[in-house]
Length: 84
Image 1: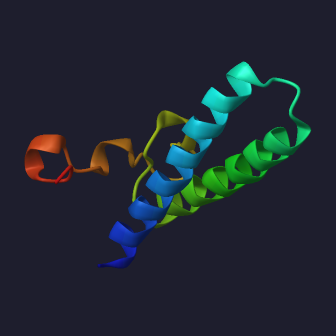
Image 2 (image 1 turned 180 degrees about the vertical axis):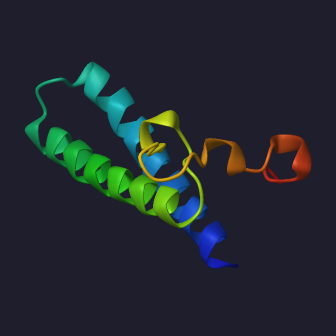
């Protein structure tokens, strides 16, 4: 597995964790420990997304830094085999 694929896998893992924590916090909004986990993994995801955008291309428009070079359109499209 290449570096790009590993980074995408790591982002997916962290994103899944955040989704599960969000669902938990929807029913347990006062659980401080869960909120700390959420904030921790949210920081990790933001860092991974930023690093991925700098190395390859932004995965969301939030990380499209237009001050340097417009790279939003550089991502492979699903029908080009990127989602396999």
